[in-house]
Image 1 (cartoon, rainbow, N blue to C red):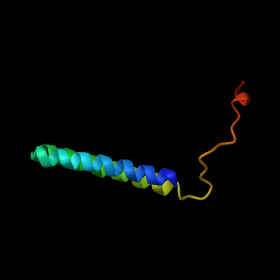
Image 2 (image 1 turned 180 degrees about the vertical axis):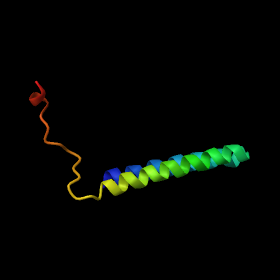
Image 3 (image 1 turned 30 degrees about the vertical axis):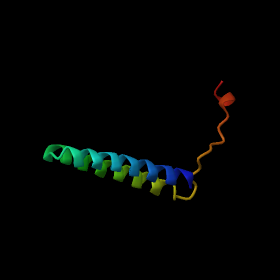
Length: 69
C-alpha cells in the first residue's frame, strides 16, 4: 500500500512542478516536452501500480546471499 501511495505522490509532485514551469514559461515547445513527460511517467506509474496487484507479487524475496557463495 505504501508503494502505491508513494508512486502517486511522486507523480503528483512532478506534475505540479512541471505545470508551474509551463505556467511561468509559456512556450509551445516546452509545453510539448512537459506533456510528453507527463504521459510517459503516467504510463510508468500505471504499470507499476498494476504490477503490484498481480497475485504472487512479493516485495520480499526468500533469497539468502550466502547461497551465492
